[in-house]
Amino acid sequence: MAQVAHRVRIAESSQAFEVAAGETILAAALRSNVDLAHDCQLGGCGTCRIRLLEGAVAYDEFPLALTPEEEAAGYALACQARPRSDLVIRPARALAEAPEPARHAAVVRAVMPASPLVTRLVLDIPAVERVDFLPGQHMNVIMPDGGARSFSMASKPGGNRVDFHIRRVERGAFTDLRLSCLRPGDVLEVDLPLGAFHFHAEDDRPLLLVATGTGLAPLKSMLDALMDDPDCPPVSLYWGTRTAADLYIRDEIAAWKSRLYEFNYVPVLSRADAAWPGRRGHVQDAVTTDLTDLSEHAIYLCGSPEMIASAKPSFIARGASIERIYSEGFLLNNRGTSRSVD
Ligand SMILES: Cc1cc2nc3c(=O)[nH]c(=O)nc-3n(C[C@H](O)[C@H](O)[C@H](O)COP(=O)(O)OP(=O)(O)OC[C@H]3O[C@@H](n4cnc5c(N)ncnc54)[C@H](O)[C@@H]3O)c2cc1C
Image (cartoon, rainbow, N blue to C red; front, side):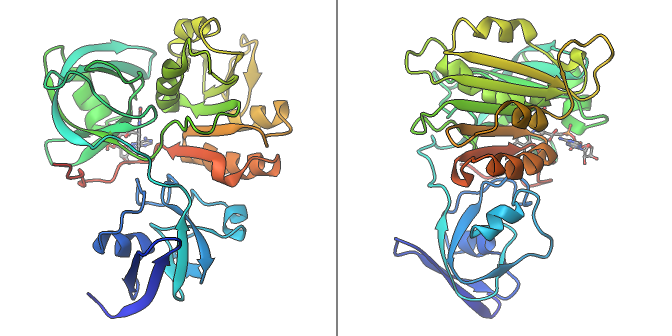
């Protein structure tokens, strides 16, 4: 290891580790076998948020998933932050009791167009009776070059069949070239379940769910798990897409009203044509127009990192608690870094 520059202690635990000159907090923690929740490692998803109780950090580039308001309130992103002094930190969120990830052979059950850009992929995992995951988590598809592509589970846990909503990225190795050739019976190598984005059952306040595009997928998994549940809190779902044609599974969503408690659904189009009778603009702006007090909501944001970066400060300005905004940015994947999950 290069010369030790600073020491990091985790508050209320006996854990501590040393950070070499130029190293990030997360890299040093993982090198020392200290388990800090993390995901994209690019400063885009916000999973590795920590609270700085003592000391100071610096960034090469201010990360997308941290707002200046969060920084001022004492938060930092461990994957990008480099200590400027010894630190005492507290992970902003405890690691949830997520099932252990494992590598599986997944058999394609169905590949169906859901909209001009989105494909619904249904996978069976025959080696297990039940695929365990927390609603909100994702899988990684392992590519022939060893790289990985992440997709969120869109169905609730139960049985060994799982649904995905996959947006085509033009010329994308998986979402365009590979997906368009997949047929029932084909086999994909996948790692699951992964990720720290998940439904927090302990936070039982009214739900505000905000998605762009296929960011709907993990939120649908959460809602599927709440359907017909007598303890379901009131649910508001704001879904932003470009055009009306991008609003896939719209018939399914219309049927949720009778199975969720006080379900308020607001689709918002950023490039609507003249015929669209509904809301227009950015989905996060529709939320702040409708809801002036967000202090009593559990908030889940998923999809474009830009939407999440814009939503957080304006939601916080309306009383949302920084600690209780759960988010997952659909960043470009970490190339060539399929995680090892023996
Ligand atoms: C935790 C997580 C969960 C995700 N869940 C979903 C999901 O449920 N559904 C879904 O549709 N997507 C999801 N994504 C995004 C998805 O992983 C990427 O779109 C996918 O990896 C693209 O792979 P590809 O092989 O087709 O493209 P690549 O061959 O890897 O890339 C082709 C080109 O497109 C660019 N590109 C790649 N991805 C994107 C993107 N998302 N946006 C814009 N440009 C891109 C690349 O930079 C490159 O130039 C998720 C991402 C993360 C991190």
